Image (cartoon, rainbow, N blue to C red; front, side, top):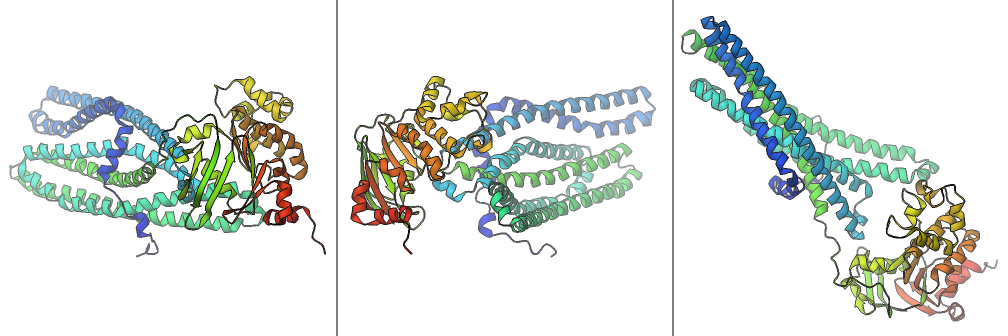
Length: 592
């Protein structure tokens, strides 16, 4: 077949649940507005019922008013038709307005819940789920579900009511002619069943491809300077072309199936009208059927296949929405970090201990039986080669991940028993890359927590030496940070990060290679701010550049996932071990 190059991996496109299960899971996001839903449902019944009256009035006008020359009766019949149509218009309007409200609020509730859930997920989830795909699930998939709970479901109900209602009226008026029309319907039932069975896996594939496109756009824009410098624009453009081609093939196959159903419906409508006119016409000529009844049946057949066509359309939309529902529920089913029983650890009394801790991101262990004790008030530097396990120790301490073996204790309490939020509120963290958010300097320093007084923020900024820089801007602390904070230099952004960590006055401080991205001159300028930040605190300093760690009380060398050496700077140099070798590589020029 001409779309034969279309291919989808079975494990990625096979539906994993029933439609009713998905709808049951998502209903609570829309159920608070059940009053409007009920009111819209009543209006739906009214509009559907009134929609059946039109052909009945046509029949009366032909068989009664026109045949008897009753102009007054014809006027009343026409007025009845006008009032009926006006009522349908108003009922449909308010029904659509109320359901639009339900759809928008329900989708907003779902987005809020989905985003809040994502914020609580462990880092392992994000290791496997690219940002672009998450954007697609939070935005695109929830919008598809909004249509499911409003327009799609309502139109399907309305179409079904119209089909059933017209069938009942036709059966009451003339059972023989109704049976002729009803004989045409079974093929369409089979066609709809086959259509929904075939098309849903395709739409699951479409949603995944859309997510891949979003992810490619996001990741390419983030790394655009690198793409351009290495002249890789054609390669990335080709990736986008490949994804768009795949989406084209997926959508085309779905549309091909959909329009095939439409073709059958159109053919059925023509067949029905021809059948009624030919058979019913003969009966009418023999006096077994009135002309008005014949007109009613022809009118109903035209109206009958319109909702049948609408049902095929809405089944198409339903399958799209169910594909989105599956992907949304997949996120909601991801387990968040369980809350620990210990809720208050604001004061570090004894220290931190790693007991035989082993950890792996996938299959290979990056930490192997680590034993490490950090006393209250002690400043410990973690050094070692890149990939040795330094940052992994920090990730475990911040509960971004959990160790597979061993345990970490905070004042003797297992970290797994400590509430995640309580732990992180007790820690000041300065990451390797300074992250700023849209907003003012004040917003970023207190991380949008308006309960922190402005004076407390300014004192922290003054202590690390960034206060004077901030005040050079006309708006001072109300200065809006440009994207990425580029209106501050790299060193100034580092001092902003120090001030942000200091604002909450934490007893435990973690610096994850906080000066690795600055040049030696800038590093020298921020050393004073670093000393002020560390004063009087328990600190873990992860550093690749050894000049930063010389102010530490103890240096711990992490080598290939294990603690290789511990001691002060001079002691480790004298041993001639791993630390000494790292020091010589950085500071002692090779003899040649």
